[in-house]
Length: 222
Length: 268
Image: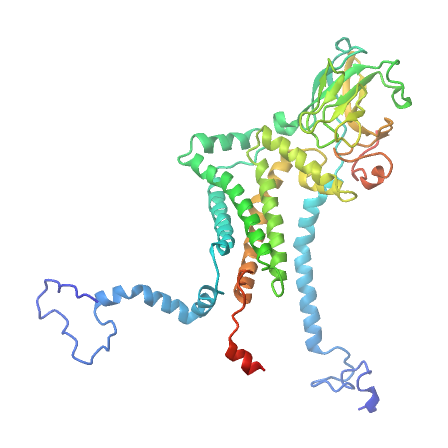
């Protein structure tokens, strides 16, 4: 037995006068069993909780391949007015997976912003940038108008009234070998029509917005 | 107990009548045993579980003077939940969470073709509104009667969590009919969740099960609606009720504490 002032400091259970202590033992069998039992329980719980959690949040990190879909021959579209086309975003859920886009040919007189100069076609998504309702192009007013909460957008899809946080989203376009216009992945734009990877509706992209609403981890650059 | 007429069997085969002092009021005849079967079963279970003490503790509580009909709003909410649970179980027997048309078709089948289907679905649909209204009335009662104050703060907190879970139930259940209204309401609802900075986009991805609304969204909402949240609500209602029984209810605020002059003298 060591000196009395060692009683609470020594690492040996024998020195600390634990009942049933062994020579050279630093952790009692009781404490070892408690810690071991709790660790085993923790491992057992983690072995089903972690996979379940990963399973539930996995889709956030999944990147889906780009889809290009033909929406009609080049003759269908003109540089002055929009033509509505139906586009399949998700082929697995029937009608619910379809959306409308508004397409027109590039017009140098109105599409003056530098980001659009290499595109032959402008394709505007009908998904309102407020909360995702379907906007429609009203010819007489030359505006996109949302039926839900009164969002209004101009010819270029820029917000001119109502609650939307940014302009309407757009789709990448290309022309295939059969002279058909194809629509590709969606992208979002800020109020200067600068391009960003696709965001959900309701997420502003001006100023601090682009940092407060980061793009999804799986988003691929085109 | 009124005596039954003796069965028409020979007296030599009948059991002899009990002698005075024999039996001591205990059941000796078969029909007497039968009459006491219910009590015997309860006694048998209670002897092995001691449940009756807990049941007495829960059911026969002292309540303050002035307890009135407003105090039934909590029980009303719980029965609304039980009604939702029972009708929901039976609706789940017919429902198919199939986003390519099967969900809508199964709801149409329940509503138009299944016996009493329209009624049970109606109970579930309108009952959800009833439950939300009752939750708020119960919350208002608790607030205006000051029943959230010490020592009942934790019960208020549990109640607020139950309110949020009720809202989650309403939100996830709204998608399941999978008609136009359900679809667009969910699009809007998920996007409202997405407007929260930093975490919002991840939350809407989690709810949709991916970047776009898809088949996973519907099955995910269905699982949350019928497995995850009901279990949580049931467990929290248990905790809520335990605390109600443990802490007792409050008197209405217009009732002053009785001032007994004798006790006041003894105090002084």
